[in-house]
Image (cartoon, rainbow over all chains, first blue to last red; front, top):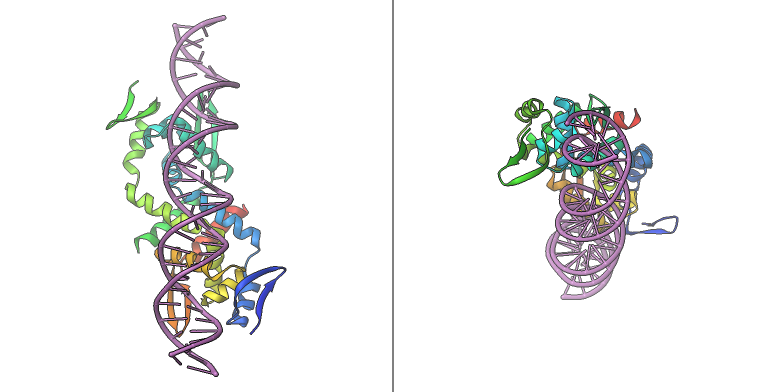
Length: 121
Length: 121
DNA sequence: ATTATAGTTGAACAATTATTCAACTATTAG
DNA sequence: CTAATAGTTGAATAATTGTTCAACTATAAT
């Protein structure tokens, strides 16, 4: 049984089922796609951002309204909206002093529903 | 316009659209459900765990195989499998010295697909 | 012009977390 | 029994991250 070496990085154990490993390796999506996918879930992996997303799914809202709804400071909300913007999960429009945020994409709700299905099981 | 007070915790701004806030507040799911949902996504929000999940979706695998596939130590893999177990995302069976892990639930793949749809848009 | 409000931003702090390391258990082989 | 291997676990470390704070911009009102 062979010690596993990839480049000059060593793994601390032997392959037990080489055939399975090779087969799975061939079917795995490209590295960077898996990184993007985990980054996407990371954005949803915070209760404040989940609440914001859930609220915006119900109605377009401004920063102050979200701050009142979640009982947080404008700054905290604004920082999280920045993350959500970077992930293309929300969009905004400006009207005078007020900035209105809304979901940039309707199908996020479907992911929420699937997630709820899982945790309710 | 009234300053917002919930219990003895203060928000740093005024309500702008009180009607919207009230309406959304009534439609929001219970706090603890939103916490559970964000915890669920938090587990998927790590590239190592995403890779493990993707691999296990292809085939049942033991800890060493996963370690070789992802070029990581058994310990690192085992720790992450612990998180996945706690989140009820994987199950395992023991055969001699070897522990085989597999997905505890098929419909996680659907969430992955939805996630990929989003990041590819 | 001045004042007030909506929102953003960067730095700092505290909390969380992924990986490493070493020690450990359990099972198998000799 | 002893040695070797598969896997787990707790503590420590390093990196990441959510919130706070203070300073800032932009728009609106007097």
